[in-house]
Amino acid sequence: DGGITQSPKYLFRKEGQNVTLSCEQNLNHDAMYWYRQDPGQGLRLIYYSQIVNDFQKGDIAEGYSVSREKKESFPLTVTSAQKNPTAFYLCASSSPGRRNNEKLFFGSGTQLSVL
Amino acid sequence: KQEVTQIPAALSVPEGENLVLNCSFTDSAIYNLQWFRQDPGKGLTSLLLIQSSQREQTSGRLNASLDKSSGRSTLYIAASQPGDSATYLCAVDTGRRALTFGSGTRLQVQP
Image 1 (cartoon, rainbow over the protein chains, first blue to last red):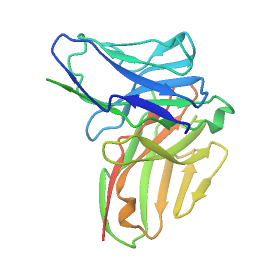
Image 2 (tube, rainbow over the protein chains, first blue to last red; image 1 turned 90 degrees about the vertical axis):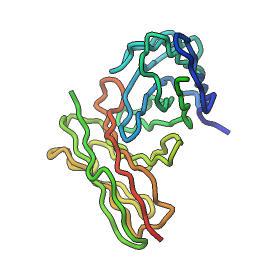
Image 3 (tube, each protein chain N blue to C red; image 1 turned 180 degrees about the horizontal axis):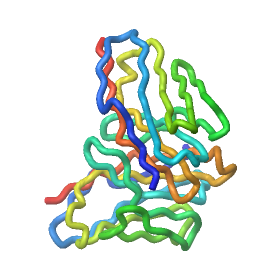
Image 4 (cartoon, rainbow over the protein chains, first blue to last red; image 1 turned 120 degrees about the vertical axis):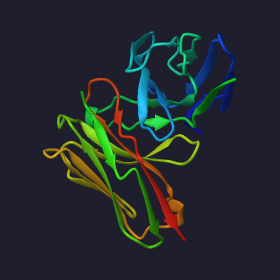
C-alpha cells in the first residue's frame, strides 16, 4: 500500500541524548515536511525539503536536524539542545503538481517523551 | 506572517445536528485552503481542499466554503454522527513554504 510510515510510534529520550525519528514514503513525492504538535495546539513547521539533498528550516528548527539523502526518506534528529522535546511529531509529504491543488499526506505520528 | 485561527476550540453537539466550524486567516493571498481531520494520537487526514479560485467543495455530508476577501472558511457537517468526533484543523497554503495550520476545533458528537 502507498503511504507514509513513521517509526517508532512511541519514543523516550533521556537527558543529553539525541534521538532520531524515521519517516519513509513510497508515494514518489518530492516534498517532505516535519511538524511538531503540542496538546491543544496546531502544527508548527520544523523542517521541510522540496527535493533530495536540500532542506530548509521552518519556524522552530532550533534543537533539530534533518537529512534528505533519498527521495523516500526524511529522518528527524532531536538533539540534546532541544530542551522541551516532549510532543507529537508528524511527518508529511506532497507532490508539487499544480500549485493550487497540492494535497498533503501525513504519517501516523511519533509521540516523544522525556524520561 | 500568515496566522490561522479556528473558533470554537471545542464543540459538543447531540447526534443528528448540523454544525459549522470556522476558520479565519490574516493574509488573503493563498493558493488553497485545506480541512483535515485528526483522531486522538493519529496523523491528519485531508477532508477537503478548496482552490483559491473556488468558493466551495463538497464531499458527502461535508461542505467547505471559502471567502478569500474576508479571510474566512467554514466547514459544514450535516446530520452529525458519533463517528464524526475528532479534531478538525484548517490550513492555508500561501505558496511560500508549507501549510500554516490553525489550532483546531475538537468536536464531540453525543449519541
